[in-house]
Amino acid sequence: MNRRLAKRCLLGLMALTLPLSLSGCWDQVEIENRALVLGLAIDEAPPESAKEDPKVTILKDQPPSAKMFRVTAQIAVPGRVPLGPSSGMGGGNENTNPVWVVQVIGHSLDEALNNLQQQIADPRYLVHLRIIVINESIARQGLDELSDFLRRNPEVRRRIWLLVSDIEAARLMKVAPPLERVPTLYLDAMVEKAVDMGKFPPNFLGAFWDEESKWGQDGYLPYVTIQGKDNILIKGLAYFSAGRLAGTSDPIEIGAFMAAKGLNPGGYSTLYHVPGIGYVMTKVTERHTRTIVKIVDGKPRVSFKIHVESVLDEHFDSGQAIDSSADIRRIEKAFDQKAAALIKSFIRKTQRDHSDIFGIGEYVRAHYRSFWRDNIHQKRDWELMYSDIPVDVEIENTIRRVGIKSK
Image (cartoon, rainbow, N blue to C red):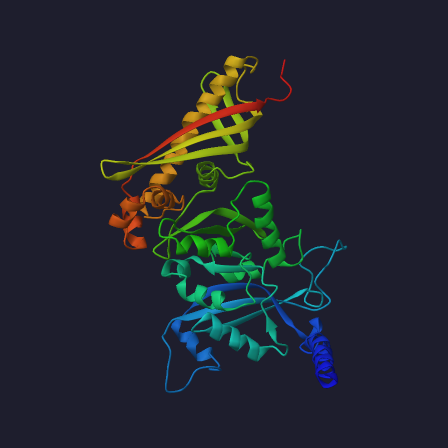
C-alpha cells in the first residue's frame, strides 16, 4: 500500500515538473539578430538575368524553367524603425535609413528568398511582412505558384495586403513619402485608412484566397501606381478570372462595386450635373443592398436593390440656390440615374472579362442547389455563364444633410 502511494506521489510530482521544461526561451532569437522582412516586390526578370543566379538551391543536373523573378525585399534595420513621432520625417540619408532594400532573383519566390538569405547575415523572418506588391504582367500569368509558397509558410499572415502595380513593383519599395519614413508602413497605412474611410473594401490576402477558392466568385486586389514623385495612388480594382488578372477598374468604379455589395462605411463623393440646378457634389455615408437571384427561362437573373444615404457637399456653376425639397428630390433622382448606369456599366465590364467579383454565383449555389449541380461542374463553367446573365440595378438615394443654405 505504501509502495503504491509512493508511486502515485512520484507520478504526480513528475506531472507537475515536466511542464516546466516546456516553457522558457530555449528557442529565442533576439530581435537585433533577426532580418525582419516588412515588404516584398515581385517583378519579372529577363532570361539573361539567370547568369546572376547564385544557384544556392539548384542541382546541376536539374535546370529549372527559363522564367525568372526579381524580388525586392525591404528589411527593417534594428533600432532605426521609428516607433512614434519624431523630428526630421522624410526619406533621410543612407546612414539613417530605417530599412535596407535588397534585390535578388530566382526561378520561384522560395528560391529567391533562399538567395536573399545567402546575402544577409541574420536569419530572415516573414512574421512582420505587411505588404506584397506584384507587377501587373506577373498577375496576368497567374498567381497560383506564388500563392503556393505563401499558403505553406506559417510565418505569412492572412491579413497582409497583396497589391497589383501597373509599374515596376520594386519602385514602390524605394519611395520616401514625407508622411512616413518606412515605405512599407506608408503603403500599409494608406490601404488600411482607405478601408476605414470607405474608399476600398477590406480584402486582405486571406479574403482573396477564399474568393478564388469558391466556384461562384472571383477575387480582386488593390490596383496601385505612383503619382508624381512619392505619392502612391489606389488606381482601382484588379479583378481576376481563371486565376489570372482579367482587367482593372477606374477609381470611381470602386464606389460602384461597394454599392452593389452593400459595403460600409460609405466614403465616395460623386460630382454630377443636375439640369436646372448646376453641378453638385454628394458624399455617400451609408449603403444597404439587397441581392435577389431568380432562375428565369433556365438562366439566372439578378437584381440589385440599393439604398444609399448621402450628404450634399457642394453646389456650384449655377445662379440658382437649392432652397426647396423639390430641388433635393431632383438631385436625388439625378444621382439615382447616373449611379445605376455606372454600376450596370461596371457589371457588364466584369461580365466581358468573365470575372464574378460580386459573388453572384454563390447566391445561385446557395438558393438553387439542383440548378447548380446540373450546370456547374467546375469554376470555369460559372465564369462563362456569368457573362450572359441579365442584371438589373435599382438605386435610391436619400440626402440626409445639406449644410447651411445660401441666401
